[in-house]
Image (cartoon, rainbow, N blue to C red; front, side, top):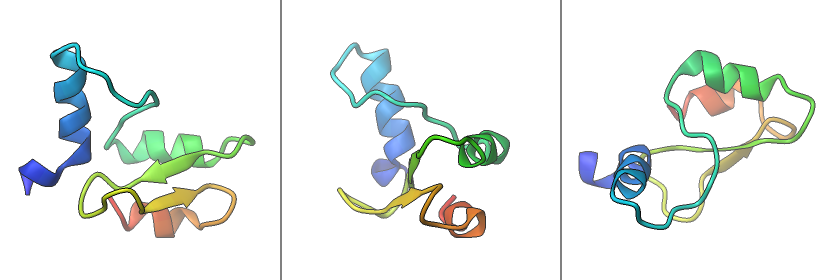
Length: 70
């Protein structure tokens, strides 16, 4: 399961000085909720089980739909 964890992969890429997609990475549910409640549109990506898809929006999805992915 750890081999497919996108959050761990991003941390590794940053640590090794390799290229990565910028953005905020967090598994802290309070931070996810904070971004969800902002007026700008934010996209959330599950750290597990998705490759290329699996984005959720704070404007198109409920908070519970997003939190269910974490």
